[in-house]
Structure formats: C-alpha cells, structure tokens
Image 1 (spheres, helix red, strand yellow):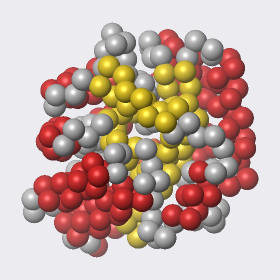
Image 2 (image 1 turned 60 degrees about the vertical axis):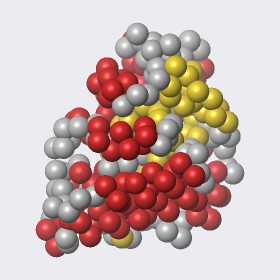
Image 3 (image 1 turned 45 degrees about the vertical axis):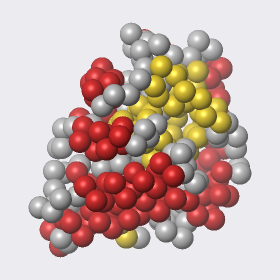
Length: 268
Ligand code: ZN
Ligand code: FE
Ligand code: FE
Ligand code: ZN
C-alpha cells in the first residue's frame, strides 16, 4: 500500500506535543509513508493569546527544525506548513505569516468560537454546559465557512471538530455542513480526513462518513492527516481513513508544494 501523505503533525514548540520533527520523519519512513507535512499551531499576533502554540519569536526555530528533518531524511518528502487558527479579524495577521517563509500550504482550523473558548480544549469542557450545543455548532460552522471564503488556506482542518467530546446538538446539522461545503467548493479548498478523532471521545475520523459523503457529492478534494502530537501517532489509522475515503468514492488526494496544487492517486 502506498499511503497518502500525512499532512498534519505538530512539534514540541506548541507546548502540548512531544518528539522532534526529525524523529517524526524517521517514524514516517518506518511506517511506510513517502510524504509528510509539519503543521504546528501558528503563533498569534499576541503571544499571550493562549498557552498551546509557539511564540512568534520561535517561528524561525520551527522552520529550522523542519529543514533539519528534511536534511536528515532525504528519502522522505517533508513539507513546511502551519495549522493556522482562523478567527474573524485575524486575516491580516494570517497574510503577514504567509509572507514570512516559503510555506507549502496552510491548514485553516477553527478552534475558537469566541476569543476565550476553544471548543476542543479539555480544560474548558465545562463551557459546553453553559451554552446550547446547536448554538455552538452554528457559530463554529459560521466561522469555518468564513475561513474557507478567505482563500487564505489550502486545507480546512478537522471540519466537524465540535463532536470531539461527543456533545451533539439535537437539531439536524446538515445545513451547517452544506453551507460550509458550498463555500469550500467555490474557493477550490480541500478538507482533510483527520484520524485524531479516532483517539478522542467521539471515536471517529473528522469529518464523519455522512459529512464526507456530502463533500464527495460536491467533488471536494481531500487530504489526509494524523494530527500527530507524538511520534507514535504519525500515519496512525490511515487504513481506516483510506477505507472511508474510498467508501465515499474518492480516488485521489491533494498535494501541495509552495502553495501549488497537484493530485495523487490514493494507493499509488
Ligand atoms: Zn494541538
Ligand atoms: Fe486543530
Ligand atoms: Fe493539529
Ligand atoms: Zn489539529
């Protein structure tokens, strides 16, 4: 099996991941991957925004670490990228970041539904009790749709992230999903199959099979990502992700080099 590229992984600079990039690269080769991409949590304009990302003055060190992994593992393709938080109003900052290094792609992710609450933060899970689940999912998808519309991102990350703790609205969310996917289609953005969901309470890939079917109907391109925060998570559950993609009718995934698109066949 020729595995799809693993386009989502982190480094210790974000303060909640372990293992150096060069060790992730070694692991990738050991599990049979041919391409990976580092996408650590991007810095915010203010370093005190939260405590789970690199500081701005560490961005150069991040790039150096990825370059070192590339040098030490010439048999592996290694992309230099970021997982960028999308919040309304941050567009100029994201544009500034984009100009600082020759990035291969940006994953745009929504974690924050307000300036102080990231829906996936386990330390703030009690916030879910103070708000109506459907209202939270609605705000989240409004932001995710905006993220796609900005055109600042090649990939939208873990599209149905609010399911992480298994707090589902009673209401039907299909309309939230399709409005988002229509924006994705219009901007020719990809969504990722992110296997980290299998390691969380929800125990399924982001996005769900039903969500992915809606994406497939619209012929929306996909990427694959483990969202590894530890060496052993590189390429994790890719067999399941490939099976889910194929079941939805996908034959190809997207690759990026210096923000230029190409397509590759799933399974080689
Ligand atoms: Zn993280
Ligand atoms: Fe994320
Ligand atoms: Fe991530
Ligand atoms: Zn992530």
